[in-house]
Length: 403
Ligand code: SF4
Image (tube, rainbow, N blue to C red; front, side, top):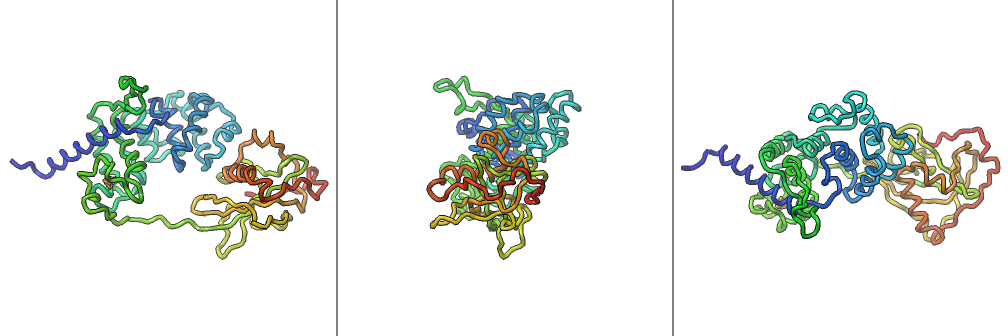
């Protein structure tokens, strides 16, 4: 007797979940936060992973867990120490949210990490994706996660135009994780000691299903040139069966807007000129003076636009100043790194020695620039060792450079 369509569909979903769990057990990347069920550790990893590559996050997460191993340690930490630990990860509002959420958990939950999806969702800086990831990874709750990777896998598998925002994506992911909730934990074999499969950490099935979909999208079902021959879903995938034509996308990301910046390297008596941001996403971080250069578009608003009123630039070397590319929100900045001299007084406290620089939290752009400068200094430009304004460290006039 033929099964009714809904029963066939349910059986197909169960088979899909089994394939995904098995594949993840054999192919999970060896990431340190996959060895723990501690919600605090998982939360920190999930927040760091927002907008940031896995390869970048690993060392940050390990250092963070060494220095702030639990929630009370985070809640008590000085903001300056936190900024230093976060330096270079960018999107600094995430850090403020982590800190305020830790304090809130200490005050309102007696230090115990909330263990329902709705309570987790109420924490500062946590949306449905992160709440679902924490709830499934730490508490094995059947909460779905859908990001661009997951949506791409589902979209191709069903040959439907799905995105991370479409209700259909979330409904499908919910069905899958609910089925996974009835399965056994998954042994993550790549994380076992060599030759000792019995030491493989066990991953709760809801977490394993969510991570399997994300991992598949990140490593196999790539945005361009999906590696279908390596994919566990290839025999059932409509995209693969139809010869690789992508289903139309419901929305397309608009291309990054190109802009030009100049970063001023000003040094005097072994001190570097920096500025501490008072507001904005980089609040509390130290930055080199950075200005936006004129273009045919209105200024982005992230940077001031009047470098000549403050600085006189050293002549560029013949091959031109070193440049880097930096992304902030929807902007793609081409940043020229230029040695410069101050034309006007600068307020006290903004000249830092190399040792002070090491101990201050620096913005991601400034960290990149200083690294670039270190690698190109001497080859392409000279350090400005002196400054024409002898009164510079006693000036009372404050800069209006950075917001
Ligand atoms: S078979 Fe190809 S298109 Fe289908 S899910 Fe796998 S990698 Fe993606």
